[in-house]
Amino acid sequence: CSGKEEQCGFRKRKHDHFPHGQRREEKENVNPPSALMSSFKSFQLELDTRHDKYERLVKLSRDITIESKRTIFLLHRFTSAPNGEEILSESEVKLNAVRQKIKQVAQELIGEDMYQFHRAISPGLQEYVEAVSFQYFIKTRSLISVEEINKQLIFTYGDPKSQSTCWLMCSPPKRN
Image (tube, rainbow, N blue to C red; front, side, top):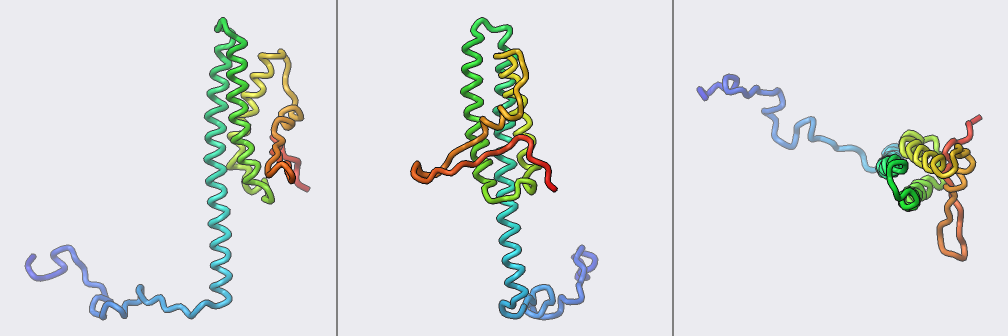
């Protein structure tokens, strides 16, 4: 460079002549923990926790969607395959694995307002309902009811002495 800093692509800033510790951006001398700061910290923790839960639910929903689609693709081979009963039993195994994922979703939602996380889990549940409906139609040549689907989504958890029940309804009741 020719000695002029402006020609080298560097531009002097008005705070460049201050010592390093006195720059305005680096001066974050906030008062010791105040009530306001503690409130914001607790809000930050709550929002981070909620966001993490939302992301876990999105991931589970994606897994549910993928496995449900695979089950549907398997069931599409039912009419052309000579071993129809084998395909139905394999689809039942796959749907049981999907129900275990849905159980994880239901456990994540215990004590939570499901409506806050509805967008995270809805795609997976929709695909699951499609897979279960298709399987049921192949078996019975009739449509499955929402009540029948919801019966499959009631889970118990905890130790055998104090088992609790959680469920995930495919069509949540309307809020008043």
